[in-house]
Image 1 (tube, rainbow, N blue to C red):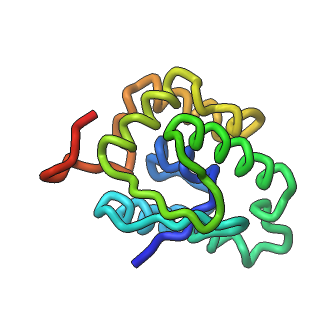
Image 2: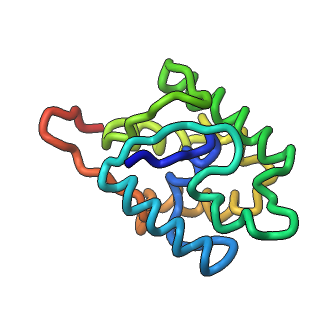
Length: 149
């Protein structure tokens, strides 16, 4: 299967430890994190994705806000620059162990954090990064043939 993600969720998944907007959101994110950890393919999308799904039933889902669309734009630019490849809707991303480690390293030193400005989760994410990403739900092991971090 393929996991549909919007660009800024490439950053959110780095520090996800099981906290979220609601129990339904967290349960869904836990399931997505498990799939990511198993190595499922990521398809970048524009707008709400598999992580946003439980929020779409709300009267005014924040995932449709212009500020969230701007987060996607900034995350796509920064992650694309880091990985030297386009990060845009329709692109598939392989979040192997080496890529996950590389993006986490850049995140921990502020290299891909412009999209996080003003986010309500920014302080928590900063603390998780400072703690070496301990207890995060998305984990990947180096598979045979993969390069380590």
